[in-house]
Every structure is written in structure tokens, then in C-alpha cells.
Image (tube, rainbow, N blue to C red; front, top):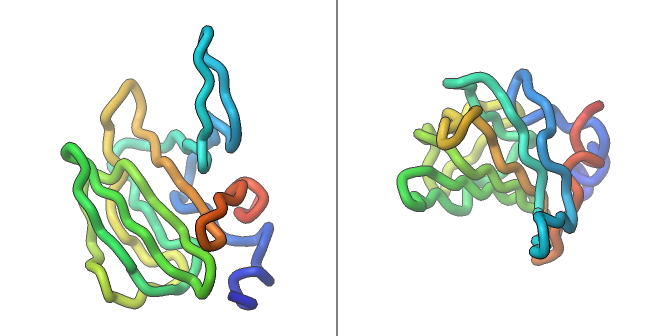
Length: 131
């Protein structure tokens, strides 16, 4: 946990190139509101998704045709959603910037949903990744 915490603000992006299209926190759409527990990053079709820090893969799940990968870093977790394929499995140890899968293209543009959690509390990933 200490090693992960000491890298706050300097973790690599989970994709080599991209831009944040939806920020962390509460959002409104018309009369409805919802919480984004992470950030949404638009990237290129077929982009590799990379671990932002070394850790142990806790889960790989398929949800309606796309994959979700959860990596543990001490008391922190990084979560990667909307992958079309994965290259890791539960129990595997990964290194920083190791490819863990490929972003899916489920909408108009390929987007990755990226989250960081401290236990059960979502963190703002934009504060953790390098500017």
C-alpha cells in the first residue's frame, strides 16, 4: 500500500494515449443523476490496456460480452472495465505497464472505464495518474 500511495499523481495511464471523456463523481443527465466511481477514457480502437502498478490479479469477469479486470495493490485496487479481450488470469502477478487486455469498442468510440479503490471507497483516478 505504501508503495502505491507514494506514486499518487505519477501512475502511468492505463492506455498509452487517450483523453478523459467523463470525470469522477456525480453527474446529471436531464432529471436523473448518477455516480461515476472512476473515469472514462477514450482511446484508439484495439488499444492495449495496461496495469498502472504492480500487483496481483484478483478477478477477471465477463459481463455481457466485455471483460473486467481487478488488480490488488495492498489495500488499493485498480479496476479496468470494457475490455474486448484479456491476457491475464486471476492469481497472476502483473508489473507496471504490463498489458492486461484490449479495450472494447462498444459505442461510438472505444472507451475504458478505469477506477481506483481504497478498500471499498472509490478514489478519483485523475488524482493518481500522471498529468
